[in-house]
Length: 308
Image (cartoon, rainbow, N blue to C red):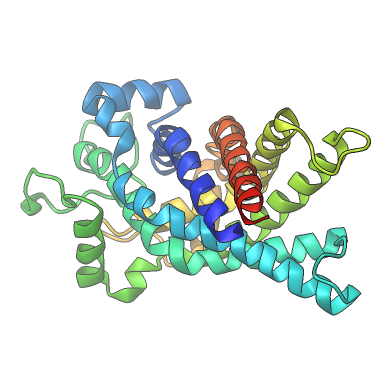
């Protein structure tokens, strides 16, 4: 039931949050996008509404599996830990148990999401890397974090869609190219999902009315939204590095690895670069995770009612 409910909740979350995710990736990988509204207007002016949905088809196709694995792994690990420590999978878990289960959930999903993330980031950033080539006009030209492909590659987009992007990356960069940035993704998802499930559980306990075992719909909405915001607050620094490493493959490579990317980014743009997109992440996380957890809890209750 957790796997099915997690799958449906994940799909609902993607439908709500993808346009803001596109803006977030562009802000993190291109210094010229100095603000959220500047990036939104620039994307709309160049690509219209479609520009906010580049690379959407692959996440929609895979999010059900990824979200299912995330929620299923979390509850499976929690049940195993409770059985080992307390003798019953239904025992009330400690905060440490929830944190460890959430951390395991984040680590497991990396192996499924890394290729999808690579394709998503490449598709979201390919237009700006093609249109913003280095200029001889002087210092006013913004430096490219993700250099454009050579001029001989033609005027059209390099990637025609998610599957073509995955095939091109695998052909040109090998299997390692599909898992580019996975080290940053491990750091991002491990800690953020531990925070995600722990904060959701604590908030649900605080928002549950006296005499009831679960919060009402409003309580789930608030707990889910706040849990998403806290998780992204923890995840944003590694999310910036992950996006830069995954976008760094379109032409000359700029970063040699995770540590080199962190050092180079901080040296050139200051420590604030690690929090690029934080405001947008938090604004996106609240409605997305409200929807995810409400859908998740609703499906769980429906399935329990049908199986009773």
